[in-house]
Length: 388
Ligand SMILES: *Cc1c(COP(=O)(O)O)cnc(C)c1O
Image 1 (cartoon, rainbow, N blue to C red):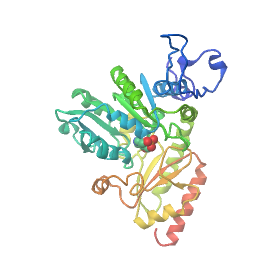
Image 2 (image 1 turned 60 degrees about the vertical axis):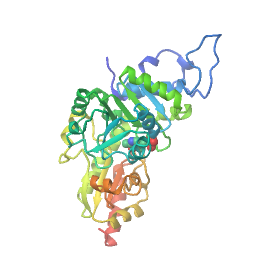
Image 3 (image 1 turned 90 degrees about the vertical axis):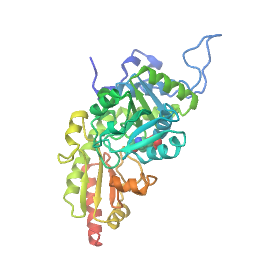
Image 4 (image 1 turned 180 degrees about the vertical axis):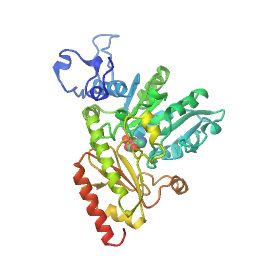
């Protein structure tokens, strides 16, 4: 019987059994670079940690199980995963990428992939006619849903059908929802990317990245590129991410609950002109999210009346920290225009709707009341100063 996702965060069926690893309940950290061989031409299955390490391998199997993939590869960061993924393509290839991606992905495409001869069409995948952008040399579609930070929702199943029809790979960066809330491979995607730094690790303390696939030939190619280029996650960091994943379910549930409370509170604020959260019934992607995901996540984007009020919020937060990440237990607030999306060309940023009064919250697992108290204090202070 298929197990629930909460259980899959804790137990890997194939690695269960009595007294494996001396009965250690926590999977051990195999802090070794090399492995001795039992004899000439013989191997334990482990040769060198760039290729395999039992701690990383256990983590990879857990993440593959969470995304219902046949293989997952654990990288030193999400960007290392994205950079390796781009090695699947050749000079002359063309990709269709969503216009509103994580800023680092856009920087990778603009400054590394293009130099390597790969071209991109950047479109709004949630609304544009993707087929009209497909050329003879188009090889893949690269999306996030919901997008970062504008929270546009793309219908994954529909996009996968279009991609299949034209023999394109569908790549989905699933960082924002985590496998706890969404499984793109089940909806027809070919590769899922994660920044493991975010919800999977969950504690704002370790960088990691993942590529997950359910296609044998892609897995083989990625494994070859992985051992050749070497951005493999270290044993200790693999263990930290494994430990983070154990509580993924309860963290996601609590963060989402807090997010909903904050969204409702923000909507009642005079200083707030717009709240973007796909859990709101009025969000244009709400119904698609209900169909393809098990939750709405804990990322909120909101607009204030002016740049001054946005900056004032960043100045005044104390418990909520002004920092450039997401997906951890601590609530963070980000200013996309100068942080996560600073390297996105201004005209694209503006076209996407990221302005100097846009703020993004990654809601953590603090007590709801304390988060609301903090926001209440910040907003009353800025009102008092005439920014509200
Ligand atoms: C953070 C992030 C990345 C990059 O991951 P790193 O671990 O920071 O390298 C990629 N995609 C999304 C959606 C992210 O939030």
